[in-house]
Length: 485
Image (cartoon, rainbow, N blue to C red):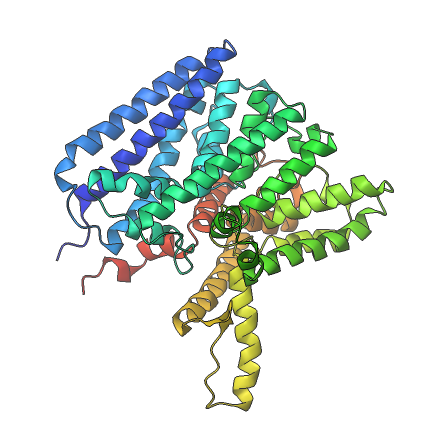
């Protein structure tokens, strides 16, 4: 039996590159509007992506009606992200905005994985067209280019359920409609609507359209790329910061809950355990950090705003910065480090472990105590009042163990590149959790430019692992994947 349908894989990768080229094309008007020469490298990048994509897509069109197996889906997701990242470096390289391929790849992977870690020291000097493409990579990666693709697969006669499940193995977003393509379309409509709403609200706060649009792209993607070197700290307006806080929180909410909210089903949203934990945890942690920040900033409103902004930014893995949290003392720093292992809701654009996994882990641990007293009792883990299968529980336990192992090994490897202890744990935690700013020399007021090329490739791999939730990538490298049973 044939393990992989190579033609089908090439066919879909071609489609992904065509989509890539269309998003590059959207950035060209920004370059033209600002009378920048950057329109030329953007046009060239568009043609390269479109030509290669169309050649692969059209050359394998005979595979269009073939069935897509799980193995194919796993390869397409992983190789698709790599392929798009490689071709998305072209605007940086052609324009000279980033001359090193390693740096360009790091910045691009950071964009598509919505990590927000950057090697740029001159953000405000870059052409607007290139900055818009930088923000666009996060917006594409936020909801997932795969979800976008399955939304249009019916037009091509291709089923997309394998791709959708491969991108988020173990815990998939709730289906809003029976068909996966309908779900993908509705998710993207919500995503697009929130992006436009934030753009308008930020413009009311005094941002130009370009700045508002760029920040909306990266807020809803929980990515954190900004058009300013100082990130959102550049904008001292409380209004702007509160608007971004609100949309970061919305982006970290399961989009199924957002869908229900827009349909007036507020009680159903409030009954959702993950959403309640997400909201209550944000409030509680913000309150604790606020009491600490008051010692450094006696202005109550600003201390509260900085605390809320940074907590929401870290929990949702957005990574925007309004204050140097490394100066808030050991207690606040420890809380922020621990939050890097939390993540927001499953079914959101946030990275990280996800709150629902922590909920299941805690519930199963508490039930294990009861099982010790009642070894013959049937005590399933319940979420939202419904018993979940033992398969899901085992998946969560395995995920958490593998996550911590990868974090440990990654930290050791980072230390081998010459990074100090705080930088090693901070850079790996933030890359694996797709957060952005870390600790040590990659903290909130620093970036990743000074790291060695080896460290940048390692962290790029960590970002990809985190974005695809470990198993999708790990499976491809496992011997069992390539055995035919």
